[in-house]
Length: 458
Image 1 (spheres, rainbow, N blue to C red):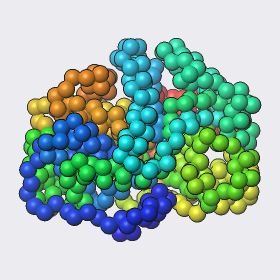
Image 2 (tube, rainbow, N blue to C red):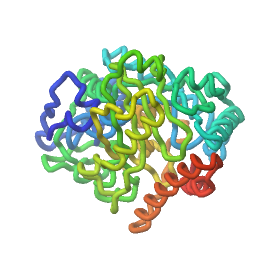
Image 3 (tube, rainbow, N blue to C red):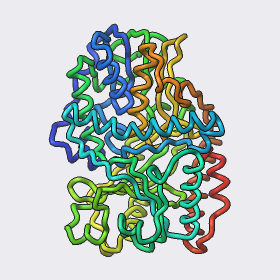
């Protein structure tokens, strides 16, 4: 497999993506981690840093960064799948605010570790601007800021922008206003995950690649090459989780696709903005997201690819020409300065994990020794770091502020069996696409999308 072709980020690496050796046979460890993406590697990193005597083994089906960690949008953000108001309803305002503040701190923790470990991942804390380009989007922007402030945040965390302020940050076409938060950094995600893999190895963690795990059970991770026996086994497989026996309905793998332009000339950037390398999006229903890369490209992604029956995950699903064309068209609509033929050089995609209640979680079942983290709904670059730190505390039996956060120990319900899962997921995508089209025509909120978002737990 040519791993460099999986994303622009992987193709940009100045290193051969040669797999590490696989598991040589039956092995004993203190902690076995399944998955060498952000979640697994951050967990290994904080365990090894806290207790260098721990025997930590990481098992990866392909190579470190093969999944979402090497293909995502490069937003190291404080976004959390469950909204602050929803967290407050479920867990109380103080615990909800503690969760959000922990996410804020996580953005800078990633930057700190990258600097400490010499991981040159183009980390830049420019914040996020989310544009409002219709009246309905501006209404949602106002409501979002009002809700955030009602739950303890301030303008220092999330501020409403008028048209001029929003355009000064990101000069998209037709901007009416927007929001800005400083709690986000851009990263080159493949550089981060590959550097993290090297960092854990320097601390004594053993990483075995091209080693698929075929079963998880208390005390063991089973592979074709042998069994890793460990009192704690961590599932860190996110969108690939349904491929594990017994986990098909744990999360739904939803595909997010991206394109990247060629490096743009300085005069084009002068017209677009993003001078601080802010990440950007807008307040439409069907998510889009982008960043200005360190080498001057626009990397831009969005949802819209279909959910595949039976939670199937296959390499062929990474590329959906219809979605790539829509992303290219949307980029041109947002930024007319790109011209009529947006200069796209790379297009890629991959699955992310969505829990049935849209709630990310982390936990350890002390009775079985099975631990997990995931359900990030595409917000995993930052959240996975918080998960890794939290799992390290849970595994070591350390009570901390992190282990008291409300997502710890949460158990999401399983997704419905097929065909209900397929019908619901794809109907939702169509509803949100239709709602955006309606709002673009009428500039009024679309009722059907609001109902679907409530169904999903937003």
